[in-house]
Image (cartoon, rainbow, N blue to C red; front, side, top):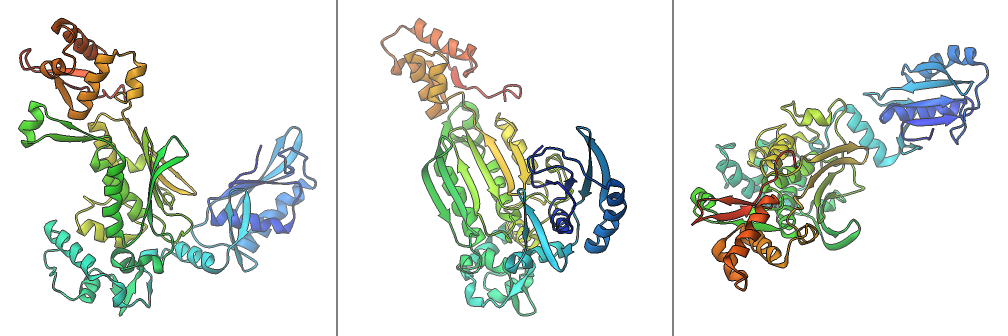
Amino acid sequence: MIESQNTEFKESWKDEHLKTLCAFANTDGGVLKIGIDDTGRPVGVHQVKRLLRELPNKIRNKLGITPSVVTETVAENDIISITVSPSPIPVSCDGRYYQRSGSNTFDLAGQELVHFLIRKSGITWDTLTSDYSIDDVDPETVRTFVRLAKRANRLDTADEEEPVDSILRRLELAVNGKMTNAAIMLFGREPQRFFINTTTRVGRFKGRDIIIGDEEISGNLIQQFTRAEERVKSFIDVRYEISADAMQESFQRKEIWDYPLLAIREALLNALIHRDYFSTDIQTQIRVYDDAIRFHNPGSLPQGITIEMLKTEHYSSLRNPLIAKVFYLAGFVERYGSGIGRIVDALAEAGLPEPEFRSDSFGFIVRMKKDLRFTEDSLRDAGLNKRQLQAMSFARESGSITAVEYAAIVPEVSEKTRYRDLLDLVHRGLLEAIGAKKGRRYVLARLSPGDA
């Protein structure tokens, strides 16, 4: 047995352990086991009956919570387990507030305490007001938003020439003459003057640790969204499909990115809209690897919301309702509560593996995996000959290859050999043959759901 954020051991009961129980209640709940030493070795506890009688009342009177207090037998030793559930309201111990971080209990003070009490009271960060000046708002970003909202038919009555302060009031971003945090974060000239680390960091990694590209994107959320999306696109690959079907669909070559742009956009929006802006320890982060892309935002899932619930139509629990509303009006968000489902659907449609979602005390993570079949290393490992590697390189760049194009690449071999090469690539599941023999085109094969 080891200690963790939700588990702590004590050899004997002391009233100072009430701080640990208080911290459990203010974080994610937990279990305090009495009669186990710091190494996890059971040593037993004395006067079990007295403690079972006294502890529930003592905890209830001091902390205002009702724990579960039971005995257990571990390695022939009697121990007491005190289980505390997470509390929906702040819990104090002798007038002070405690929380857990890892296996440590710490005292909340200063801004941390203010943020904790606000969160527990149900007030959202983006609705809080302060003495900001209208000069702190960038008028051009506001007018850009109005144009987007009108184009999306979600703010028909808006007028670009309307005074900025009037637009902010209309959006409930200004209340009783004071602007909200959302107003500054969405439309501010320099939001980071007020809110440290509310930036988006986009990095390109080689392997797990070597950074070969990195940018920290500041500015307001509209600017961060636009610039971060472009930066991610610069770090991933795109190929072009010029098949007859693609040409018929749009009369131009079709771009096929490593990951569907819709999935990238939804993951980025999710990170910006739902991050915990009370947390200033870390930026919103996007890490692009050779084989995956990872989005991380501070702020775990609200209590009662599970990963499985996110994948279906669900009620959207908004951490930042004003920020979410503005992104929706601008047409960036299709509808509340649909983002995760749209990511899953977009990746499935592209024949890519289902994304991974994780929520913990550090925040929320979306991880998408790439189709690795067409990388140079994978193709070389598959045992392709030099000619086939050239054919696959051409197909990767253009999205397909024909017999005529292949003949121009390897004119030194016979037509029969070239046909066998292409047929072998089809049998390996790397290419798909489309069309009649005379006009046949070989396109990159899609992953089947089973392969993904």
